[in-house]
Length: 227
Image 1 (cartoon, one colour):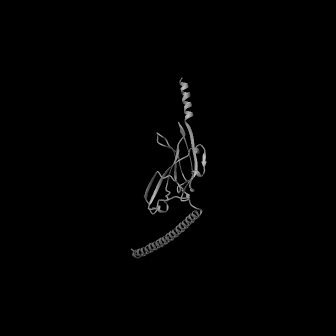
Image 2 (cartoon, rainbow, N blue to C red):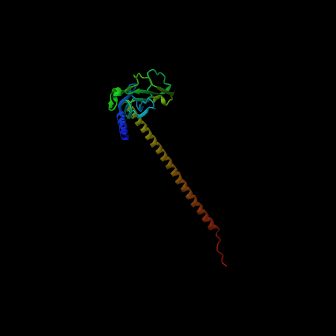
Image 3 (cartoon, one colour):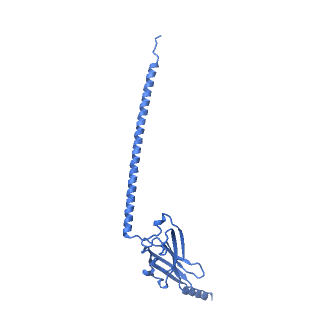
């Protein structure tokens, strides 16, 4: 009887516990460019328990992402969704005095499960997205943040300019180091020359003192008197 119960339990577990895989590729877009270094979380919604984090990733230097997660469910299909934290400013955000981090929660369609899906459907464009952010955290912007409030994909022209800027900085740094080394070498040589001169003067002074002492000794030496 116990064996039959175990068999029935195993059948029930295998039949109703379904392992499903979500594997997606896409791109995050902001102001017409890829949104880089942006965190994406893949979660699975649970009715009674806290939602499960299946996977997490960051977009690459062009704004592309690939994420994959797997989950077992006893009944029905899994209910996955994205949670994306980003700093893409929206069209109605006129102010530049604040730096904001937005959180978007976006559902994933059922038909994408179990296979790698890579199409424009999962290119998320925040410029045209109709879903409002679930939360936002804003802080006063600083001078340092003014030019780095959004991390966007660079064009070829921007990358070329960045490479030239790095080359200029490297050249200036090299010239500065060479100038410092040359200056330091000159100072060291001057110190060595001064030290050598002082040593020679001290030797000459010592020699002269010894000569004078020898002469004085010879003068004071009494002459020999016969008995």
